Image 1 (cartoon, rainbow, N blue to C red):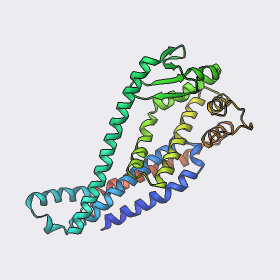
Image 2 (cartoon, rainbow, N blue to C red; image 1 turned 135 degrees about the vertical axis):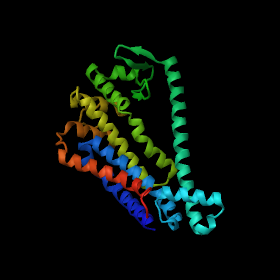
Image 3 (cartoon, one colour; image 1 turned 180 degrees about the horizontal axis):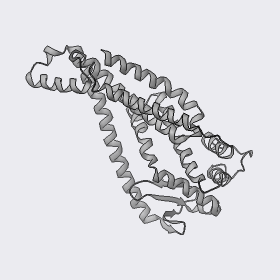
Image 4 (spheres, one colour; image 1 turned 60 degrees about the horizontal axis):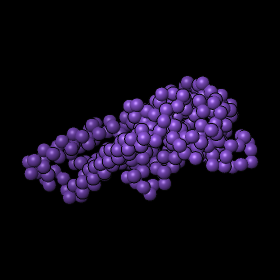
Length: 302
């Protein structure tokens, strides 16, 4: 039962970390490192949840989960499974495998569904979109509201609406395009995918909802940072406020903006001190330990 205890500890650590990490502001200073930490946290939680049940069920073998699964298969083939495991142990194994299957099937279904929707969307864009002088990867669609988004994939495209083209000046438009291209080039859709899958598996989990919101915010801030490499913060902040349904508003104006937009604009316009190299290195090591610990418990003997 040693492995099972270790997995319970890992689950407790992951659960206890979600709230403080989601509410902290230090990740805003280094979204890239923070996203790495979130990925490791999600991987550790998923592995530990499945492995805990399997470790409980396979504990009589006194091995890691993977070697114990091989021993279980051998006992099933030999017809000796009830000699090695009690009914309670078998129930724990079945529940663990069912949870793993649910996550795997959900992942496959989500990915295939996303790919189908993306293909349909690309086909629609081929009919409705038209090229612009803003770049070979940019499509313009006739919409009365401001919109800009990326369609990721092997050949990513950035879609902007005619309202966006009218609303933003040339510098703001270039900053928005840089932001959307950052999403496509860094495959932020794949970063969000694990948290989408976990939320579908556990739709009523407040912790997972909080984690998903925090990761989505960090993804936007990371894309903002990429855009800032070539554009002024004031330019991108102004463009963000133009996208708000309340209309264009100068930073600090009276018109309200959404919490996310407000946070991003404040971040863009407030001087920030980046995390030190030592702190970033410590966070990377922490992320590696989070990811590797439950994975190592799958093979190490109990």
